[in-house]
Length: 165
Image (tube, rainbow, N blue to C red; front, side):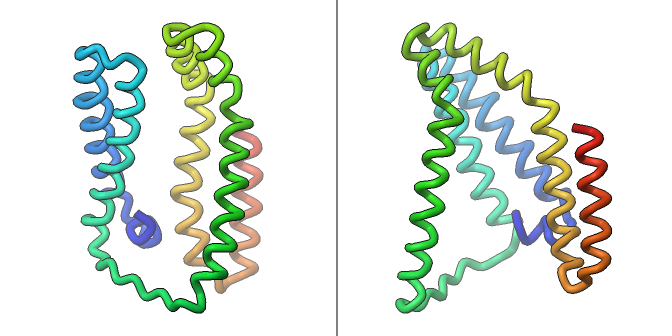
């Protein structure tokens, strides 16, 4: 997906996202819900959507997978990656503690309602932030060697984002 977005080719990314959403949520999620999988239908829907999106974007990118890791670099990569993973785990736990407690004390039906209400309340903000970052990051990466223009465009987009959000 990174290669397509850096080229500002959002058409193939959009197709991959729509197909993965339809297959993951509509076909798998709803089918499993009808088959009485309960909350697990949401889990399997999310996992299948993410997996399918990864597979589709890989094939649409035209990039050939060719790992070129040297053993001397693995130690520094592991050190950095492990720290990022631990921090991300703590961020996830602290950001999801309310969901865990709601499910534990109030049960699955209330948790489902809570999850949907939480999703609806953050949907517009998340949509704006996701859309703008998907466009701005590749555009800014093209300007990385033009520091003054990058600074100007960044400040303008930062001001507009602050005004909207």
